[in-house]
Length: 341
Image (tube, rainbow, N blue to C red):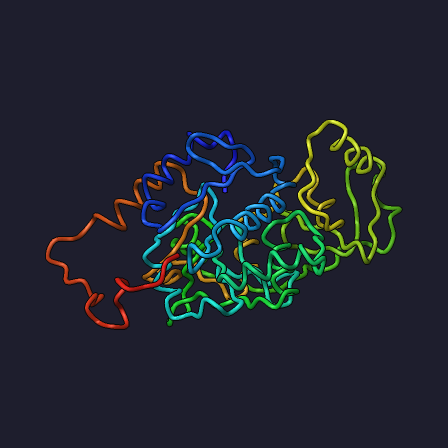
C-alpha cells in the first residue's frame, strides 16, 4: 500500500529489498504509474485508508485469487523477511478462514491485526472479506483501517491466528526494531489495563471557565492525555469549546475515526504514543532482547536507508566461523518447498 508522493521516494527501495523475495508483488495506490502501481478508485488521506485497503483486496480477489496461497498487506514503510513469513505459514491450511499479524485486543472480541505490522490472509479469508461487502452483511463503522477490517473479519467468521513463535515471541512487529529490542529504562514491562482512574470532579465551581479544560470519565488509550467516555458524558469549558470548533475551522485537526469520544479526545493531541499502543497488544508485550522471534517477519516505520540496512543484515551478513544452528536439511526447518505467499 502506497500513495503517489511515495512512488519514487519509497517504492524503489521496497522493490530493491524485501519485495524481490516475494512470488508476486502488487503496488496499490490511488493513482496508476509506470513503477507500476495499480490505481484504485479512492482518495488519499488517513480517513480514506480503510476504503483504500478494501478496494485493494477487492481488486486482488477479482484478478489474482488463484495466483498465490497467501495474501500479505504491507505498507511502504515496512520491512518484511519473506522467507520467515513462509516459515510461519507453511503448516497452515490455506482453505481455512484465518489471518495472521500482530494482534491487538481492543474493540474487537477476538482482537484485530495491526495494519502497521502487516497482516496476511488465506484465500478463504479473502473470499469472506469481499463477500461481507458484496452481500451487505458487513457495514463499515470506522475509518481506522486495521480495527474496522478486524471487525469485518470477525463478523465473517475469519479467525485471528496466533503468529508468535514456540517461545511466545512476536514475529510481526508494529514499530521500529529499537522500540521492541531496547528494554524500558525503568526495567518494568507494561501492564495491561484498559481504563485510567476517573478524574472528573463532582463540582465545577472551583475551576476557571476560561481555561481550556474538559472533564468526564477518563480512558487512557490511543490519546496521550486520555479521553473522556461519551457514555458517561463530558463537560467543556467555554475555552475548550472554542478550541474544539477552531480545530476544524482552521484545518488543524483531521478526524481519524468515527468513534466519537476517542476522536474528540484526540483534538490537538498526538495520537497513540508508543508505550500505549504497545500496551494494546493481545498478548502481554515484551520489550528487550527477548521481545522478538529469531525468525522475525516484519518491522514498521522503516526509512528507505533502514530497508537497505536490514536487507544486508538478513541476507548477506555472516560472522566468520559461526556454525548456524538452523539446519536447512531438516524436514521441519526446510523452506525450499514452502507454499507461495
